[in-house]
Every structure is written in C-alpha cells, then in structure tokens.
Length: 481
Image (cartoon, rainbow, N blue to C red):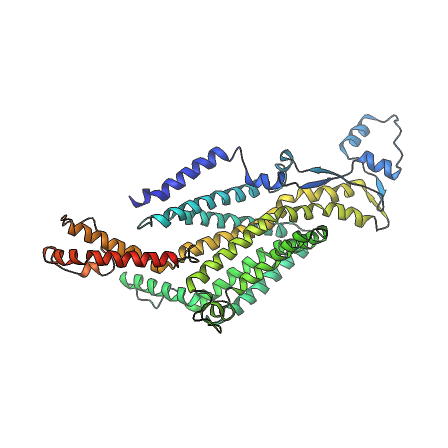
C-alpha cells in the first residue's frame, strides 16, 4: 500500500501533463526560438556571381543527356576569398530548428529534465510537511533517468569522433583526455579524507559491512564483495570516462565564453556576469576541500566570536544552494553563449577576406550554413553537463539525508521536536481514557518499555502540563533560530 501513496500519484499526474502539454509547449524550443537569437544566412549563387563578376552562361544548344547531368549537379564556380561580402541575418524560427541535427534528442533531454525538476520540487515540498515512511521516493527515479539520458547523449556525441575517418585529431584528443583524467582521479582518490571531502571511506565501510552481513546470512563465507583498491580503481575509470565525455563540451564552453566577452565589451554588467559564471565552478570545487572550506567555516572560531561562522548543517545547505545558483546562472546566460556561437559564421567570412586565393561557392556557403546546422549539438554540449551536475546534486541531497532548510534550523532538532510531539499525542490518548496504543507508533526504545497503563496514567496526567510547556518552548526556540 505504501507504493500507492503520494509519490505514485505525483508521478502519474506528471506523466499525464507531459502527454498533454509536450506537443503544445517545449521549453527547449523556447530557449532557441524565443530568446532573440539571430543567425546568418549564406549568400546565394546569384549574389556571389554579382559580387565576383562571374559572367552568366549563354544559353546554347546542348544534348539531352548533358542537360540532365548539369541539372543534377550544383552550379559550381570560383570566387575570390577577399570578396566584399555582407551576410544577411534572420531570427531563428521554430520551423527551422526542427530539422537541425540532434534537435529531437536536445528537446527530449531539456523538457524531460524540466518535468523531472517539477516532480522533485513537489515531492520535496510534500515530504517536508508529511514525511514519508516505508514509501518509495519516485522522484529519485526521475532524477536517475535524467542522469542516464544526459550520459547517453554525451556518449553519443563523443562516439561520432570515432565513426568518421576525418576525425583523427579529435579521437586522439578524447583518448588523451581519458588517460589524463584517469591519472588525476587516481591521484585524487589517494588523498586523505581530512583534506578532500569525498566520503568514500565511510561509504565503503557501510557497503562492506552490509554486504558481508548479507553473505553470512546466506551461508556464504566471504571477506567482503570487493577490496578497497578495486573499488577505487573502478571509480577512477568512471571519472576518466566522464572526463573524456566533457572534453569537447569544455573546449566549446571556453570558446563561447571568449567570444561572448568580445561581443559584450560595451556592456559591463554582462561581462561581470560572464566572468562570475566562468569562475564559480572553481569555487564549487573549493567547497569540498575540507581545510579551506568546512574546517574554516564550521570549526575555526575567529577573534571576538564565541562560535564558528556556520553550523555543519548550514554549510551543507550552502553547498547545495551554491550548485543550484551556478546552474541557474549558466542557463540564464545561455542565449548570450549561443549568440556568440552563431556569430562564428560572420567571423569566418571576415577571416576569409584576409586570405588570398579563390574558393568555390559551395565551400563558402557550407562555411556559413554549417554553423546553424550544428546549433543543437552545441546547445547539448552546453546544457547536458549542467543538467547532469544539477540532478546528481539533487540525488546527493535526498539520498544523503540533507535538508534545504539548514539555513534556518537544524534538521536534527526538528526531528527531535517531531518525536516529542508524537509522545505528547500518545500521552493525551492515555489521559483521555482511550487506553488504546494500537494506533501509536513507538519510537526508538519505546518498544522495549513494559509498563502498566492504569498505574502510570495518573502520573502522566500530572506531568502533562509541564511537558507541553517544555515542548512548546523548544519548538519556538528552534523556529527563532
């Protein structure tokens, strides 16, 4: 009956909303078509002939098979590279983006991640007021699916470099990146927990004890499922693979950031936001280095203070909120980054003007049109790592037992207050004469207490007033803090 509770209802309602709303509204399409993006149109053959002074072919008598062959082949001619060419611009329309490469995958990832975020927010709000017990947290399934889709798309984009014979350099870079990140991951994993806060030692000990207990109950002698060295090596391999998947998205992000700063040189506010967005991921990494983050903020007591700057639960909440802020800021700046990518078409034409020689009209048109053709691929390289980071953070929060309200109150004290309220309700039932404890769920060690209700009811009634007052004072103090 637990799985048929609120979690399943939220999931079923969201599935129905996705089926009804997705054909009419797409957040992914809105990002591309309603944020003011402008693309450059490639010059037509007529414009190139007029600018280059290519004479028109005179109509003459041709045989039938020659006419058919000429109609099948594109009209190819040469123009100077330094041609004074001015590209026309046009907004990005909805009817155009649907034909772009990887548009379907991009739309599915962004829209599904949005729906999964809504499911997670509703589930977190519900469980905050009504904690779930013995019920499956289906929002984690949604988050896990988003992580899987993001990994799948990044992997498919990387595999493209191994399927083409012309991408030898790209393949070499991916392989080198895998080996470099593997080495870095192995170095990081040997760092002590007192310096780098990974939580691997605690997780391995807990997993090893649970697995050893399970194997012993099944009558299977074992010292554990795997040694710590094997576990760390597998984690290092996964980190190397993830780093290789992030190689070209990282290079693309760096190029777009550089171009964005160049095109926003007149707007100081945008330059500030771009620089903040670029440096914030490094700050996030610092938050997991214990001596300069947790110990500095939650252990050290500065002069003139009687306690540290932050409590441990407050520090955990601040780290979660910092990740959310970075992801939201990056998505807000997405139109600026995409416009800087679309401006590459103009930059290519300007670079051609500085070169000598000639180029065919087909090659020139491909240089301009290919930029818009790969718009969805570039957007995926930008959005997929952010979505992956966001939903891994949400899973870390829920599965790690953290709280969003750590800035205002301690979750442990909140749980103690709830337990005291539970005891008060049980005492009220006894005092009112019901004498029925079947509906009261015992907490912690109450199951081991054997007492006579008739003998203790009078004593509980006398202490009820003072117990209520103490509980109210505790709850008020927690709320104020």
